[in-house]
Image 1 (spheres, rainbow, N blue to C red):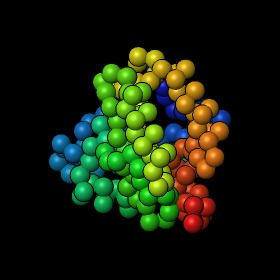
Image 2 (cartoon, rainbow, N blue to C red; image 1 turned 30 degrees about the vertical axis):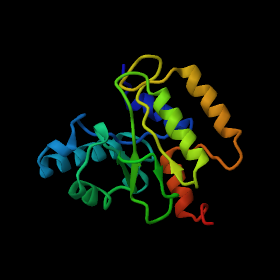
Image 3 (tube, one colour; image 1 turned 135 degrees about the horizontal axis):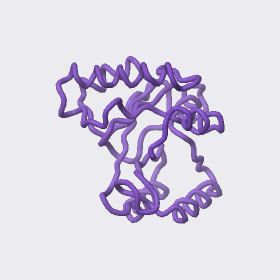
Length: 182
């Protein structure tokens, strides 16, 4: 089961971010522009009517397959707070001007090695905002990680000085409020 708005409202009430991914899990970059826009608008409309407190103005639209086009991204960035699509793991720190979030992934098998390599390079680098798309746990999904591995990684990161682990929309909201100014 993939859930429904009953489950997603329950999770949102407990503090989880629930963000739109599309009305149909279609590779938007391969669709005619108007068809891709229509599917996204339908998704956003349903989210507004079914997910308590949902607002496109604070949402991050997560492209299926991380696949977009410059035209689609420019259009959608006028409707949602930001988009997440294919790109490097290291993004600029969240700020009001950040509209498109880059995000790599790896699969179809376990992506722990890829995450680890990219994360270690990031932690040794000059900084920024690290974003990665793992897509499943414990052998389920495309590019999954083991839940025990993820728990250990998160425990390590939350105890690393100078590192904060945040969901994307919360990080953007903090950036909009000036929390990440040097």
